[in-house]
Amino acid sequence: MQLAMISDQIIPYTDLDPNYLDRGTFFGDGVYEVIRSYNSNIFTLDDHLERFGHSLDQIKIIGIDIDSIRQKVLNTFDKADIPNAKIYFHITRGSEPRKHAATESLKPNFFMTITDLPDDSAAKANGIAVCTCPDLRWKRCDIKSLNLLPNVLARIEAEEKGCEEAIFVDENGLITEGAGSSFFGVFGNTLQTAPLSANILASITRKYVIKAGKDLGIKIAEESLTPQHGASPDELFLAITTKDIVPVVKFDSQSISNGKPGAKTKKLIQQFRTFI
Ligand SMILES: Cc1ncc(COP(=O)(O)O)c(C=O)c1O
Image (tube, rainbow, N blue to C red; front, top):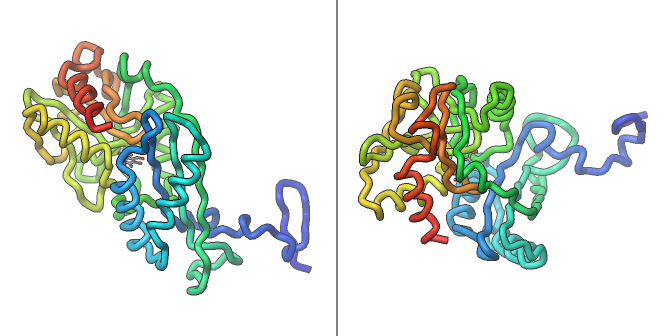
């Protein structure tokens, strides 16, 4: 008799809820997005949907109508009625008995949550600590894939060191990005961040930070930083949808800009607000 066990309960395999056979659970075989709203307005929905389409294409989940995803997001956001919301959704290749190569006709699974965004004012006002970590991820970090084990392990390591974010350093000694954020350094009037490539996620916040920098007359250098750069900038910050710009005041135990959020970072936070 074919059986399954869920926690301590043995049930007939044929009674199993298909959600337990989701390829997202078995293989991380899916892609996701995180979007936010400010004061009841969803921020940069089109950018996120475009990136989601890219992720789906790249892992060959076909036939998803992006407009229908837009409608799902808008309808559920409307119902949730949360002014400052975190909108998370993913699509997996579908559910079936575990095997590596998926059945072609499988129906993809969609999942979404809309929840309150935690208050990030302390991190914005005081800055956060980060530490470097080897970048152990795969070679397609431009895909927002559900496979996040290296990111999870890096965050655990960072938390153990009393840091809020892990900054990945690749095998060439270059900083790629944070475990869940883009990484920026300010050197004089230049804002520096890694160039877009398969090694990093095309962060939507990164795109608007660069726009904010240009609007303020700051030079933009899309060139990788090294940990040595990271330890000696005028200012550092992270960019991420759920918090937009977060000042970094400690890098590998070294104090940055006297342990306080820098002036340019504060200006960029203000300029970013004009896009909302
Ligand atoms: C690895 C990684 N880089 C960068 C980002 C920032 O991307 P975005 O600005 O689109 O939130 C994220 C966000 O989750 C991420 O996971």
